[in-house]
Length: 60
Image (cartoon, rainbow, N blue to C red):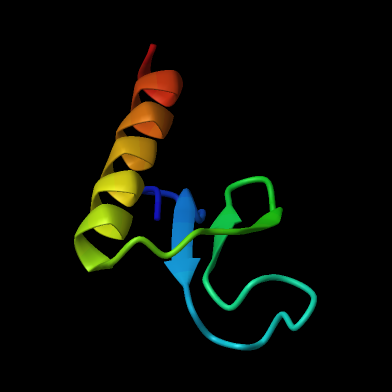
């Protein structure tokens, strides 16, 4: 979340989007995309990399 309580990026595995893969992410623009589950470490690394990219884009 941003300081304004906006979602920057959220990964989850709740089955509330049957049209999307079980593992998916919610982007800041409201889009929901499937995520390949490569294990917890891989998913955490992907998440941190994407959050850092978003932060860099918003602070440049």
